[in-house]
Image 1 (cartoon, rainbow, N blue to C red):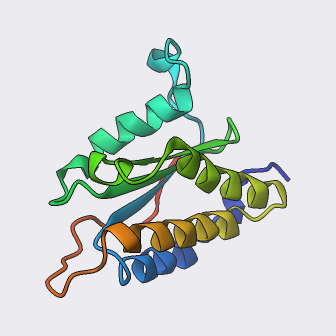
Image 2 (cartoon, one colour; image 1 turned 90 degrees about the horizontal axis):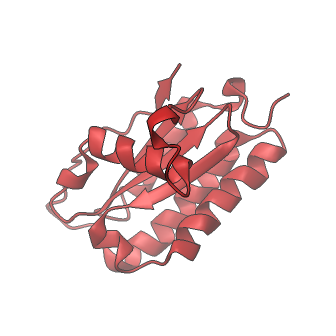
Length: 152
């Protein structure tokens, strides 16, 4: 079974974990799974997977949250890679090492055949960190959809 097999993704569990995260923080998180990363135009970049995640972040208009606190978890199945990126409001509080740690959790679980568990573990790491800097507010609204996007 490939490390990042599509069958290993339980969208319902991941979406439930996103909802739980968003009960703890005003931050907004989306998960985008792509069967085969569209990297052709991005091959000049040092890390084309991160470049693709940035492209999707903008395409999904995640930079339009009120507090610039959107986070994208991007998984490229065929390439067996991931990227976790945050908007400027969040990135000022966390280092690139934190984003990499989130990816490491995902890939470690995926290597054991459980991508869903890896994404959920990364969501827990995000919830812990984001709730410190972006605690949920009484008037918090859900600015972005919580559904997992799976791009064939």
